Length: 319
Ligand code: ADP
Image 1: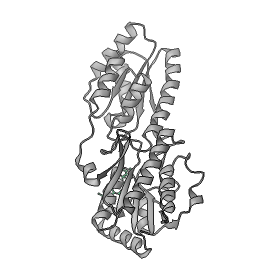
Image 2 (image 1 turned 90 degrees about the vertical axis):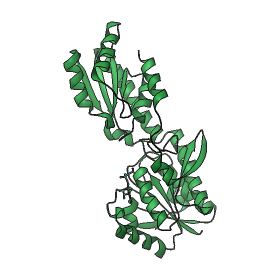
Image 3 (image 1 turned 180 degrees about the horizontal axis):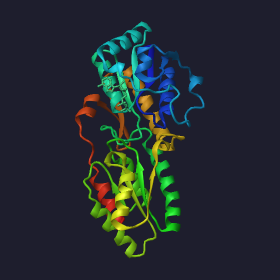
Image 4 (image 1 turned 60 degrees about the vertical axis):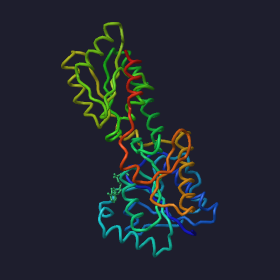
């Protein structure tokens, strides 16, 4: 293999740049040229590409976002779109592709693999919702951002003796909310994977205030419902002054943490090794601190990992 391409697709995540850097440098280390495709699958269809050299990925490891930009592409979901993309790859003499993105991006990557084009995936999304890897690139950084916000809100919550509802991202997954609840000492956490009821939340709240708590923080994952609605319901039911913060896109930005930079470097480099070993239709991941490889199909078939242990812990520690 003498020439490969790399793209970032779907939602951006801190650490994508570190992953691109690892792909580029690992490939060049092995004497392979790297083409950067801009704007995800859209760029593949519109042939927006350029050679990326060692220096082009310099000063990038600490930057959030993605230097290759990202996009969602409806055209790539069609057979015609994918054929166009394939044509461009072949015309340019590109022999393999690394797709850095989330589960949607992997579905696209799998389609290219099925057309016979060597394609591998690197899991990057703040949502941590990809089976086959304990952590996705960007999750740790987003968590740090959430914890910073919770710590600050806690100061003002204590001063005013208020209840705070904080809505965090995660699409259909509760990982961000759950980890943040444990790390931030939240009183309650609501995630899509677990049933919940308002009475339970409010009775925990009132119990806390009765024993002298100065504030309460309730985390809700966006996939489980609206923070604003929950805040109103709590206030109506308990009469407690309740404020709502929807953290939004601050969770997607910022310099990647050490964990995300190292993870991105390991997985990006491993993706190149896989292509050079003749592998295709697989994703890289990290399990029990080791770099692993799984077929894309594993990702589509496997159900979300169980959140029981961490959920129970958060319940027990917030009594
Ligand atoms: P993420 O990768 O962050 O989950 P999306 O779900 O939006 O983001 O997917 C990113 C892109 O991957 C989509 O815009 C589309 O171009 C491509 N994609 C998603 N699903 C498919 C599919 N079934 N077939 C082909 N391409 C797909």
